[in-house]
Length: 102
Image (cartoon, rainbow, N blue to C red):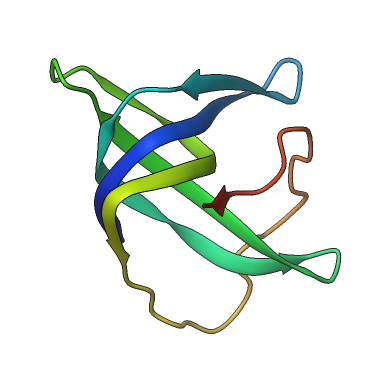
């Protein structure tokens, strides 16, 4: 779980028909009102599968998979560990790449 603020973010929607992510670039200040997901491995690399809800200055809300973000004021996140697989079945892979933050 997480909250905070970003000055830029790339979020996306996974289109089941095309099996590709549809990215959306946000280049204005937004508050992170919700952040959740899991941390696992994919092809031997750490993989963050994160979903985010962001609120803009007028209260408009955007959400989707979080691919990247630039933290502006502050951000906090917490994680808990579990056992077993966090990524059952085949995982969709397309660009953009897994989440990163700056």
